[in-house]
Length: 236
Image (tube, rainbow, N blue to C red; front, side, top):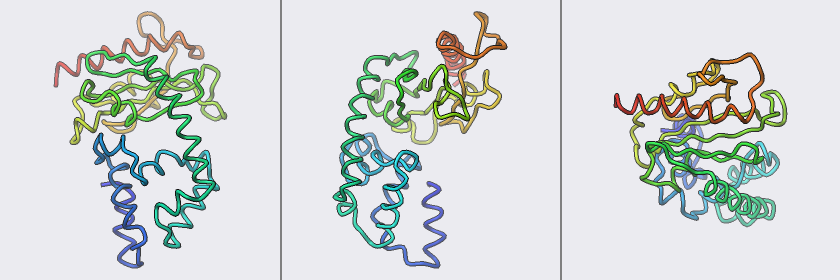
């Protein structure tokens, strides 16, 4: 159950939320891990909207959508709005670039799909990777950010995200991903099926060094994460 579903269930006891009915089922699936691979890859209107609008990138458009839903607009009326249509077209172009990056950098190590988005100026989520790889992976690791990035700055630092293939493992993955996210980064974490951390500066033995991380550290981090993954796969 998603956080949106919980909020919806509470508020609907006091207010009429019928206008949200066609949205909440999809929001629950997408946010709560209940969407199927076929649904995620589909062009269902709600899926198209969810993959096209990001409140961080388009706050005005996101606010317009929220107000339109409160006014009873249906999904097609929202998609037909010029500002939304423009966002959908832009996201479609970005999607083509993302797919190129995935195809170029994807590798699979013991059913762990690894994709590198670092230095590309873009990123994607675990659903996208696991949907494309399908049953050939149990989880994915996505490297993202920039070598000169900073947590408090406009450019994100080098980092990694770990996601269970929920299309294949709907009740939880085979490995607790926080073992990877906290292996070197004390601030890393999340929950067992979706978490992340920063790339850490490591020496050849895997010890943390007192210096800023560089792109050369990425493969060192990855190699140790693969080892942790393999060790815990054996336990599972």
